[in-house]
Image (tube, rainbow, N blue to C red; front, side, top):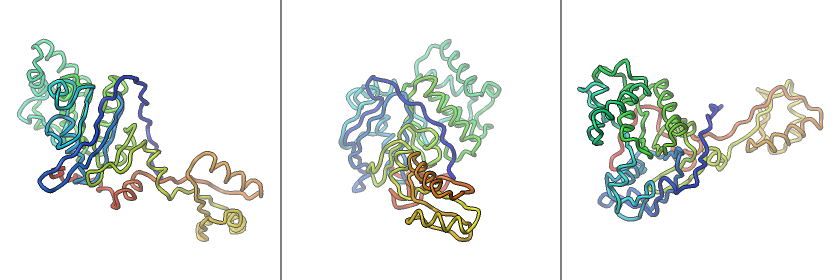
Length: 334
């Protein structure tokens, strides 16, 4: 049974997309990493890019954040051309990579003030912004402690706070919760949701945690071997995968036998007295099953709806199970 998804906010913006890309390609030697991908990401939304190691997720982030050049294709970030206006792009984006950019020898406040200096903020504004971010990320009590004493979750919060010093409108989060414990991961999710709902920030998220994409993303794209092989909402992607069914349990064998005669394509389990009826989980399908049972006075003890989850989507589309929820190895040239 899958966890209930907290709906991500639906974008209502009518301005230009936050990110648009057409035909992005990138090779390292004879290894093709990106094979002509297209993107169109609305403002004020969370876009999640899923894919196995080596699929090209990190390369995509590096190109869109101006860290490396694509071999072909074009992209616009916040309406600015990626290569012809690279400095303008950098002025409106923030990047939190797989590995923390926190200086462990500096205190939390010093890390933020360093970022303020790099953004050419005057001393007063830098101090104000640092204090605001320390308070927002619940780090005020440890502002004077060195980052070396922080837990992994605290360092990731400080890392994201440092990204926000420049007040970016688009934030690239490259596997931001890798290695965090479940509680710290959920704390980061709440922070990410707040950036979108409260500040209207656009989030470009790469992740190997399918639950993370399911919980946070307005739209999800699956990248494999450098190609986008699917894109849509979490529900849209799940509906593309066969295997959904309605599981009905009966009090006795007679009820099971009678119901099995009504649904010819159903699979029965004698031991558990259950009938598995293929279905997409929609209200009309569920209503049709209930109406059929009611028309013959067959009494069911319980009914549960099972739909494919993102694990099923990942496995079906990429031909492999998703990476285990452990610390992932860094992608090499991907």
